[in-house]
Length: 335
Image (cartoon, rainbow, N blue to C red; front, side):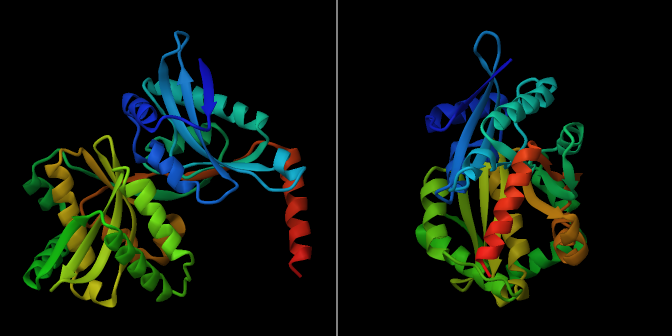
């Protein structure tokens, strides 16, 4: 087996390889360029090749490079959105080991794997010696008939969806810049109510439009009452798999049970489009303890709960020591 790393690839050709290997949204070209949101972050497109030169695995990594030497050479950081995907499942672990070897040669000292949409993260990250951060993801199969999917929802969740419909809530798919701006505005307001400040809102709106929506890799779903938006969510998708990325809501959103209506409508639409699964996203162990409502909200849609930890690992002790020195210097400058 051989690994190749590219900084620049054809979007269509790369996504064809993602499809071939059974990958998901977090392996796509669109996701790779979307997450490269700073000048010192470079997306890397990694392929596993057979002896015949055929692609048998793919991965996307974001490489973060400090600006000053020697840190720029020895203190790079790498992050995966998801575990790599391989045609042969037995190749996944050796593929990860090959990637780590390549990262060391690039000057990476620390790697983080978010393990989104990665059911095997516990086994793979444990085998590689990662420090795990407990989290779960919530999968809903769309291959059953709609009545069966509906029956798996908790009774109180079904009642809230019916209540929303009686109150005139409508949820619709959208892809305009106005839809994205509305979503980000509601997300900003929702976070502000929790004491969290979000900056560069306009820049993010344009990035979502240019790098996700316009590339047909994400859609905004907005719930309205009498043409007034009350909540919205962004769903990434690829290869018949959908993933709940971000959301926002007004105070009236919960009052009208808008988020529940939005997710049920999204389940229906993606099922009609022939999708196989929808993933309602992750909840970390800390969020499970501090935001029990979030865990229950996702669970109540009848989702399969998969323990899917993220993890981090130090690849170079020398790089780690240099990075600590860098942080120490930065702390003195900040005083």
